Length: 376
Image (tube, rainbow, N blue to C red; front, side, top):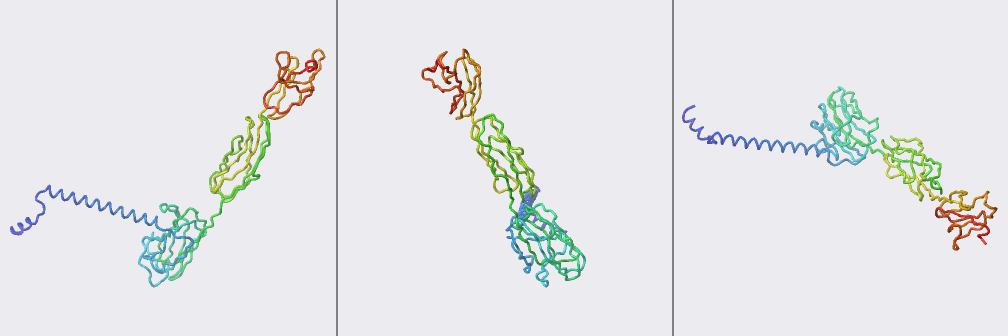
């Protein structure tokens, strides 16, 4: 290199110092990093757009006569070659392993039917049908063998039950020979409504005394099309059930549930046992009814001595007991609920007769025998 050439090169040098060169280099590296970040964001958004795009409304009956660059609603692809223009409608060219066609649908799927044409030879190829609930994680559903001779058309139909939660499907290619994909039909599944039957639908325990023993009653449940999980059974205040959950998965054979009432506290206990879960759109109810009456102690005193006690419910009645031993041969003329020392209150109520019937009991009460001489 001549001195004149050297001078010309030096005159074109853009950086006066090494530090300026390094500053410019760092600036360029920073710009490249930002570009890489933008590229990652673009790829991420592209993938997301594939998953979050418009879904096809079932049922679908698609033909791909417009090729891979004009795919119908809900359909996307990866890796497909140039269209087979001379093989309409089998234009979509699968020519490499892991090429795939993807479709997003709006509902549960019953059947998937598709047709392909063997174009690139007679070697056996395969399509692996996969499904996904979220568009991210895919599970194998069924594998289809594409076998025959050049230009054969193969019609494929699913023969397995497709998970009702799948909304994304992929046809993933395993190459033997090139294949043209041309027709796709997807039918909508008829999703059966979960049902639960209860027998009987109401249980009546009647009117009972507080603290009494009341026989338990039973109802049965059975169901169909129930989703996997547990039925939850809850009882209202005043009752308990033999089972608070029942495991279900589809059909539930007749299962007994025993209901036991609690009579420890007086009150009215009307309500519903509720059953939920299993995909039921609303709770199933069993009506329960019971009235628990307060009980009162009735004490019978003769000449200062307690001769008898019994009980009565709220608003009920009692009959005075037989008294075998009466002092001094006195005769009981009746009973009263008020006594002052040895003498009956002037305002007290006299229930006449040794076997007086006393009604409308509303509290614990003590009755005193009234002898004939006091009653006069």
